[in-house]
Length: 426
Image (cartoon, rainbow, N blue to C red; front, side, top):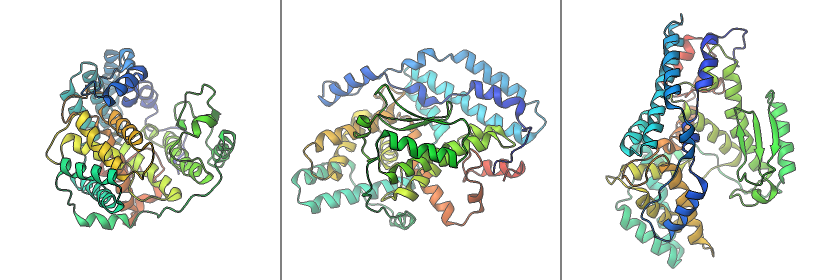
């Protein structure tokens, strides 16, 4: 795979695009101290909704970046290959919308921000919201059967807030596609052991110039792979112990399948292909990218549900797929009740439910003032939808499976398929 060759069709464009490229969500990082203070005041009901700050937006040069993309677009128009022109024009237009979205965030213009977000990431699909309702309904039924008074009370409140939870039963058929989870009784690996497993994977996948490092600052709480620096960062043993998922060999291999087997390999193969743009992605590729990454993870770890339920459900009820647009507080209260309903009895159940609900809402409302009903960062819905799309595509026996990791594109996007086919990237 990769169509390795000395000269790509976009050699004259890619480096310039790469220098201008940015990830919108990185600039929507919430200032940590402000976030923690807001969380405390919010949970103590001193404030109705949080007020976040996004300090990285202050360093974003809107004019220079905008002008850079516009100039590149003119250069793209002179490229001799019409397919290359199409691929770059669509991607640049998407990046320009993201700039407008960040600008709206800086100006606290929630409606404009939400409009731009939907142009980039789309709206959550009603048919997947049917699956969300199924998950919630099962949780409420299990709570009523548990004879746990606290869970039952939360389930009753949840039903009162959401109303009718009936769902389309045809969604049940898709669940048969999921690999069943098995009990993971493996030994918990420490940071050094995890580093060794990742280093072996890097070597086996022939990922050039990648390195594996253990965080020495003590700040990192989640393992991550940085595609720009080609670095896998592993938290300290202390922070690893605070993870929700224990770092057994099975869990680490699932993370490798997600981070390296999907994200890193697609980046590497894309930059080696006829169209280097595949290294950073065709327009709106992320749904396919995250769908594949979560699929790869689930093949090792197993799964009870499709990926990304919490975010998809939050965005869906936030934008009002059930007929009621909601702000941060209203989405939080529903999520908190869901987690109280679904979490098994524990001394810290309320705290755990509040933390899960808060973290989910913070991701889905970042970039907004959190106060405008229906205005969200809608990226959260793509994980669930992308995951389901990949299962359906594989179940159909599509030949597209053969080039899943050729680069960063969405395997169910017909425009992407046409671009690859016309350029004979296989």
